Length: 242
Image 1 (cartoon, one colour):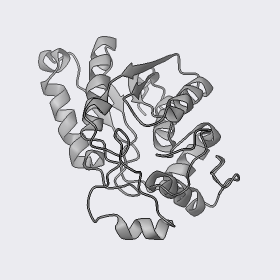
Image 2 (tube, helix red, strand yellow):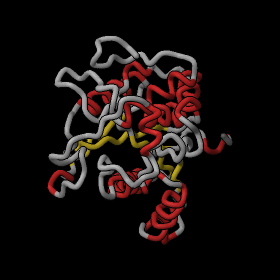
Image 3 (cartoon, rainbow, N blue to C red):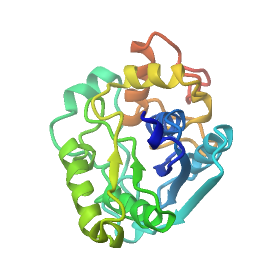
């Protein structure tokens, strides 16, 4: 990171999950003054927001905004509607199904909505850097996690804002995990001192907040820790870490 980039304000999308927490650590390590943004968007549980609060507190983030958006008003996803979250017996079973279509856990246009809010906040802060934890390797196949999507949104950001049109700022969408598999993400976070016990990734946790261990997100997370040669520090419905 060039010296002139250090201590610049940035908006980082923080869900409380493994990926966004790693990105938060990357932004902090890069010297950015982090403004963390999370969403209460009508998701089926609040466990991830509790994790987001823990993460930003542990990392010493000075400002954390939780914005309210009711995507449940539209539904259309297992995360925002009365649709069962798909479960799998193993990561191998999940891998066999990936690529057969976009799964029902995809929330229509969610990253576009989230990045639009982040862009609006960044412009008010005078920040030109936005960070998001999307990944195009170990992921569920969501269309708004691809590099071409991020490039297109960056173009939009510079066309759709006062700062971009007047040339006072050039917005950059940082997606540092884009070409990393989950094992590489875990290793990166551990090297940066991330405490993954504070995070949460499950799409369908128990009322007590335990991860199911069988949804797409849990299986990809567990695969990452296993391939990184370490143990996931969170607990699953079996009662023990997997």
